[in-house]
Image 1 (tube, rainbow, N blue to C red):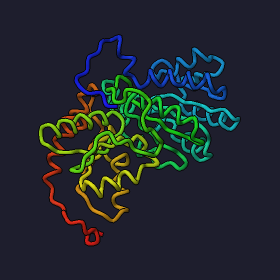
Image 2: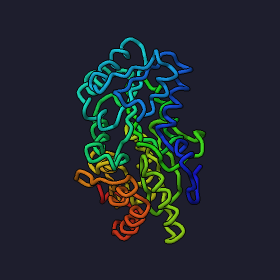
Image 3: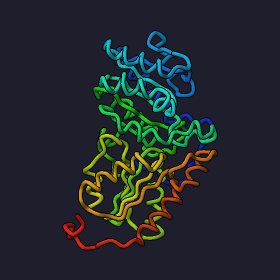
Image 4: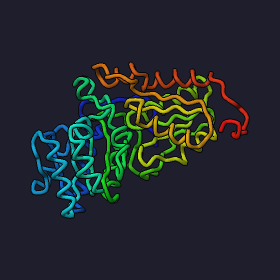
Length: 338
């Protein structure tokens, strides 16, 4: 269910809108049901919200200090011993500082470790460029055995964290710092790893988005429908790997125009994954990737940075209008486009 209308909230409400807060609560619920779950933090238990798991299960929680590489190595050993480690740290540290151990200790051995990477994309915008993480999807998507999930809000995060336990092998879940826009009212919708969620019907153009950009895409679709009469299909592509090829190909065939939107560098992430599916199909369409260009991002609040890089509602609306002006072959004969 999509929540419409304006947002009204106070400081009391903010935990209910935080993906990290929900992640911490869901992990506690899972820990109650499954005694093999353990939690690991690299001195960021409070910031990543895994600390609530540590408070509830102190004998199953390990704070390794500021030593992310050691944490990943420890998690690998625990997984070899039959436990199910949930690692929690900032995305920038998970995907880069501990990359060797992530790659060799966990993914190479196909171990049952779940990595919850918080403060992803530009969501920790005011912390500075060194704490922005706009390359992790390109890094993790290239690692064998690893599944990569980017929830759109708290409810989807809850579904992803629970689904990760049932998936054998390593899983990377990318969430923001918190206080995301609320997209789903409950967890009761068609969430399935590897399958996109269609949030808006449309035949004029398709927007494929992930993470914090999904809400922006839905709002853009509403504006384009009411103001321009443009019917936009919106896909919540929460799983980047394995990507839902069927959903992409249906959008390609039925709308002939596709825009991808992600809080990530335009190289190697969602846009690249969708482009690969399109290219391998041998069919053409008008196509545009929205994200961070080939640059290190500027510093500022998340909402300001999203506006600056045109991955917010207004930026998406502008891009849709531009793309609709592009020429492409209207006929249904694909053979001359192969």
